[in-house]
Image (tube, rainbow, N blue to C red; front, side, top):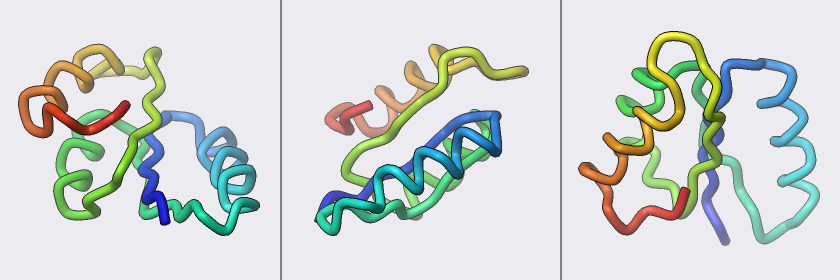
Length: 78
């Protein structure tokens, strides 16, 4: 089972992506975040295999989140 964590400021997109991904029985969405800081707090706790990451988010954008994720979890696919 592939564990996925979704990061996007759009609630609509988070729900839509969750619906699409969970149509595959091999994928489990283990959480989602609406902001970069929330994602950085929760990803280590949820321990996903892969993260989807929106680039354009208010406050901490996706590229800033990616830099921090690379520091925290260098092998985590994003």
